[in-house]
Image (cartoon, rainbow, N blue to C red; front, top):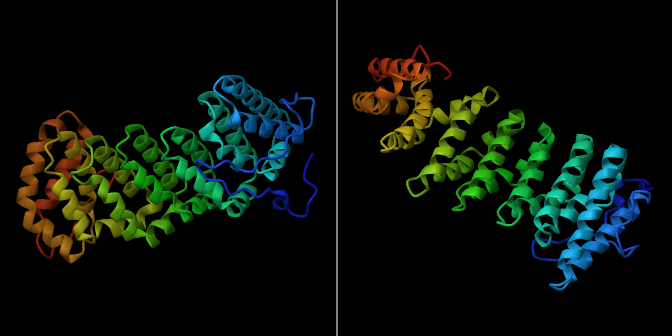
Length: 363
C-alpha cells in the first residue's frame, strides 16, 4: 500500500536519532511480527514494535526479543523479493533505511546482517533519482552510516550499506559532498586493522567506481584531500596502512578519467620529495609500491621546473637506489624490469632543461 501523498517525503516521520540514542518508532499495531499475508504497513509496525521490545528487554528476554526482530526482518525481505520496487518505494516512504540503521547498535549480529540485506535490497530496487532525493532529505541517514563506519560493533554493516549506495555519479557526488572521502581517509588510519581495511575498500569504491563524479571533488579539494591522505604514508603509520595507501594512490593516479588529477599531482615537487623519501624504506615491497608512483613523476613529459631540478640533481642517487633495491626483484618480474629500465634511462638523460619523451608501461 503506497503512501497517498503529493510527495513521498511528506509521510516521513520525524527522526533525529544518532548512535547511542533511541529513535522515535512507529506505534505498534500488533504485539508480534505479522505474517506475509498481512500488508507491508503491518510488517513495518510489527518490526518497530519488536525493536522497542528489544531495547527495553531484560537479560532473560533478550534472546526471544531478538528472534522476533529477526523474524520481522526475514518477512520484510521475503516481501521485497515478491513485490520488488513497489514495496521498496513504500518502505522508503516509511523511512525504513534510516530507522533500521539507527538501531544497528542494539541488534545482535544475525539481525544486523538481516538489516544490511534489507536496506541494500531497498537501495538496489530504487531508481537512482529516488534514492538521491532520499539522501538529500534525510541527511542524518548518511551521517549515521559514516559515524557507524568507525564503530567497532557495526562498521562492516554501515560500510556495506554505503558501498551499495554508490550506484551512480550523482549518488557518489552526494556522498562526497557529505564528507565521505574525509571520513574514510580518517578511518583508513585507524589502529584497528579491520576498520582500516574496510575504510580503504570504501574509499576505493567511492573514488574509482564512478571517477567522473570523483574528479571534480578531487580537483576542488586537492590540497585538503591529499594532505590528509599523505598522513597515511608517514613513518608513524603502520606498515600495512602505508602499503595499502600506496597501492590505492597508484590506482587513483593510473585511472584515466582522473588524468587531470594525476597531472596536478605529479607536478607537485613536495609530493615528489615525499615519495623519494619513502623509496628509502628498508622494505623492498614498499619500495616497489612507491616506484609505481615515482615512475609517473619521471615519465611526465611536461615536468615543472622545480620537479625537473630535483630529479636532475638527485638522479645518480636515485638510479643507484633503484638498482640496489629493485634490481633482483626486477629479474623475476618482466613488467617491473621494463619499467625500471625505462625510468633509469629517463633519469640518466635528464638535465635542468631537458624533457621526457617516453613513458614506462602503464604510466
